[in-house]
Picture 1 (cartoon, rainbow, N blue to C red):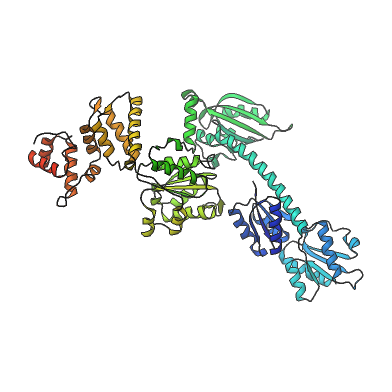
Picture 2 (picture 1 turned 60 degrees about the vertical axis):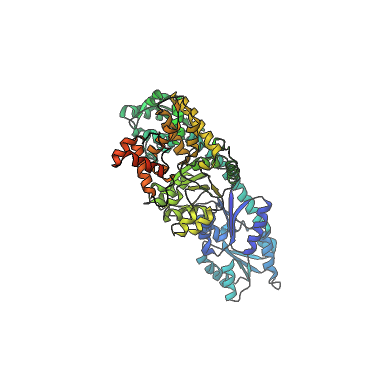
Amino acid sequence: MAKFAFILPRPEMVDMAGRIAAELDMEVVHNVSVPTTQVVAEALRAQTLGAGILVARGRQASILKENTALPVVELQLTGQEMALFLHRARAMVPQIPCPRIGIVTIQNMVGDLRYFDEICGIELHTYFVSGNAELEEGAARALEDGMDVIMGGDLVNEYCHRHNKLTLFIGSTDDSIRAGLIAARNVGFAADKEHRSAARLQTLLDYSFNGIIELDARGMILRANDIACKILDRERPSLLGVPLSSLMPEGDASAWEDTLKENREMYFSALELAGIEVVANAAPIKPGDSLEGIVFSFYELHSMEREGEQARRERYRLYRYLARGRFEQVDRESPEMQRIIKLARTFAATSQPILIQGEVGSRKSLFAQSIHNASEYAEGPFVTFHCESGQAGQGEALAQAEREANNGTLYLNRLDCLAPEGQHVLRQLIEEGVIWQKREGRPLPAQVRIIVSMPGELWDLVREGRFQPELYYLLVPMRLKMPPLRTRPDDLERTIGMCLDDCAARFKRYVVLTKEARRVLLEYPWPGNYTQLRAFMERLILTAPSRTINDNYVRRLLGELYPEACAASVSAPADGPASEAAALLQALARNQGNRAATAAELGISKTTLWRRMKRYGLQDHFESEEP
């Protein structure tokens, strides 16, 4: 639905416009009265608020037409209003039988003034000007011509007051404002219809599995979709404005020029385009007898032979910004996860930014995708921005990601790595709904849902001076804290079972965990959560020495792969440093639990090794062996 901004010269007009717009069910994002010198700045502000159509009057409307790209609907006085104001002007000099009335204004503000002098019993003179600088000149001419009353806007009224001349302000009543707003609403209806048509066309272009190029009647490229650019390995700007034949070898170019001259269709033709062998179709656009353009579609010949339709669709799916996560994919055996999912669904119904906090591997990205797919932004793109990818140019890169996410969701992973420059860009989008890019030189309005994630506490970064407090307070109200997998034994056990089933299906490896082995897995802290558990289970199953996996093998593999994590879980006494326990555990892991080899590596006896293992609680981590 079109959004409107009213920029008017008088406060009383603002009130009338607001009331009438409400009656007409118009969505007004900005309604202000400003001096003429400020109208352009106010229009830019309205644009950042999402306004698509401006409504203004007189000289202000002319200035906006010259200095903004938005359509401007002008408020023009109706015939009834002009008759009313002329009647008021005549009443100001009742002693004069046929007073001389002068109107000093912009011509676009009034309509046809013929016959008003005869109707109102006056001598009417008009002094049309094109700018503020000419208004006083027009008023001076009216004064010199001996007008009894001079009508105009604020500048004209002020000039007349300084020269002790009767003057009347040309205002607006409900009639002209209502007529202007109805005209603006009709423009809005037309704009909405055109926008929907353009959106449907753009969707067809973007989601076509073929390259599509739009040409003018001369064969010059006007537009190319993403797939066309990808197949041809060309940036879009390098394609626009060049003849399609310039991308072809001489023989194909000659045949194409013949097709173009004869306004013929081209069907399933093999040719070479930018060095790529393609199969192409061309359809002339002929609304009447004359050719207005051509739609040229194509696909890569060898690609189609090499891939099947299913593979090609999958390549395209991965190429676009799609969120595949759904809440149905989230483990929800535990009451805590059920509570988190319910809260996330509630947050999804809003447009507010969402903060997801959780340890590594706690499926923050899955939650972000699920929120996107459960929200009003589900039809839009889901763009992921990795904040840890580097500091240099991060702000400009983030602004580009925001543009790509317009009308969809932008997911910032590792918010704790977002530099001050990026924080500023993000805050502008959340607070003002605009994107700043250096190459644009102006703010671009955008509708983007923000979801961010990070491990740890965001307030710690604020306290250390590494994160803007204002941005913290924008993000923290809609916060989801992902509980670690180790705190949810039901979900942990279910995930272990799913990993076993998945590996059995993929690798044809059917293994069984002993009760003790399963207990070891359930008691391990899994600091990497799902990511660590899934990778470990795959390794465990692939390298299992037998169909039955016991606890000793699980402990040995955990110690070999994650010696630091295992050492952290070992309880060392106050007089025994944890670093010694870690070193001992790593040595045992390197030697696959062989105590003789471990003792030899450490230069100690097997008895001393066994004593130290018992001291740090490591005797159960590896198969028992008499010292």
